[in-house]
Length: 183
Length: 183
Image 1 (cartoon, rainbow over the protein chains, first blue to last red):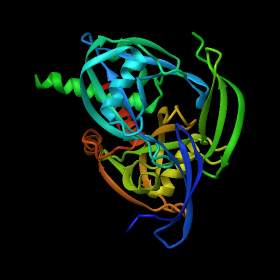
Image 2: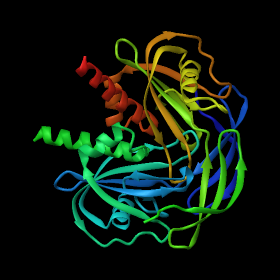
Image 3: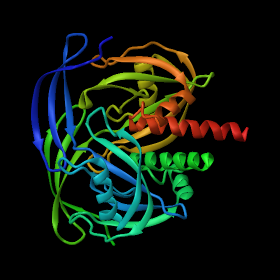
Image 4: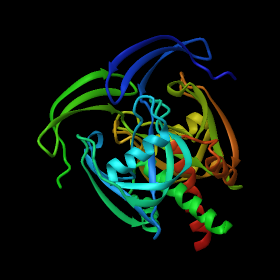
């Protein structure tokens, strides 16, 4: 079965600095038409900063859409034409004040393929050192450290609910375990 | 530090059947103001259907926002006033044709707390039996089975990129391993 949906019409509803919204009229595989509301996002990078003692750097941040302060990994949106690795380095330092010697790409994820084109590139950062913290002007975050194992427990018991953070932590744990196993 | 952002003004930009969009003017912790574009979503449920041979039921689906056919777990949006468990049961049968004797809540996740209020409730489904498949009218999916271990490999090698699917599979694996260990 050909599952592809051809765009017949596309209408930009909202054009913002962070996200935009368009509504596409599409031709379905059975010849009928339907509408798809699509949030346009430039993509993002998320970083799992793990220090030599196997502590991970996390942040607490207020998220207006859910009206809650939640625990996340440092992350941020790609600037225009920015490559994901540069974004990862920039966001790590902007949000936590840390720099890293090594960035290892763990995976990339679609957060909400049903209504948005956002892709998040997931990096492990090793060899941390203190840089200078200069948070984005309208971003307020609290930085803290826990052991990676403790962070995994917070994933399992539901204390950490942010999808990119869950995936980053679980991938980092698998990667570091395999590395240890190898040698 | 109080990280809360108070809403000063809220404007509905788009009101759709699947998502809506509002733009809030907020008061930041430092007294300045900023804008937050927020996608409103009713929430969703995702199901990890694992049969007695430890095979998991997956679907292939075209996703217009990313213009790709991708591999996902069965999932869907909550109907108005629908509880997440009912949604999980309904979507499992609608998308795959399977029913399940047991649904176990694994966790719940925020897919994109930076720009949307979507929460996805994650369930493991056991005791599968064939029900009747009646796909949503404008949804076209292909159903297939792989072993849970193979699905985990597809997560690790990046063949599966959908966030809720990655989290569902990794949580199901952890849950089933712990269950085996215990008993």
